[in-house]
Image: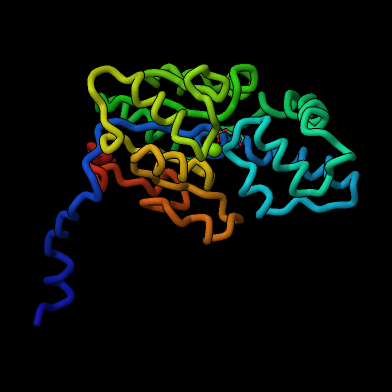
Length: 244
Ligand SMILES: O=P(O)(O)OC[C@@H](O)CO
Ligand SMILES: [Mg+2]
């Protein structure tokens, strides 16, 4: 029988990679940038006026979607039809969001991973449901991270006919890489159930980094679920390992 000392000195077996991807696509809100809390805060405030409470099952349905789609969900699910239109909801939350977005922080592990992949020549893109104007507000203090991306696709891009969970945005992001890239070459990082579904609908691999308040039933469909980007091991996906 091997002693504890023998076991300690034995080289760890090299794990078989889950897949060998060559290209990476990042979601933005709630994955790279800590902006989801702003949406929650503003929506809680609006709902409180109607004596209602914003909860995580509603959050799960709204997050990751284009603004108009999530506004429709908000009004319908909260039974506000006749009291508030989706357009009024968007108008009302706009001022509050515009003030909050520029102060957003980068989420843990995002910069480390992006710098590592860039240094190793792995092509990266961002695919966000956010439209151009909100993207500019959110990224104004984090420009460097986005210069390392080959490209960014936003929710109001003409190639994005339908928002997540439609695969449109991830397929558009894939097609804009150089050379011939297949969905099975792409690894998507997402925080939202609709985003994971979009990646899977596109035929890609999906690593989910969900908010801990999101019910575990929403993790279904992801190929891997992590508590933080800091826990990501590139070699599990055929990507160059971290050296530190
Ligand atoms: O696709 P992401 O970057 O999460 O953006 C969606 C955002 O508009 C709100 O959830
Ligand atoms: Mg997101």
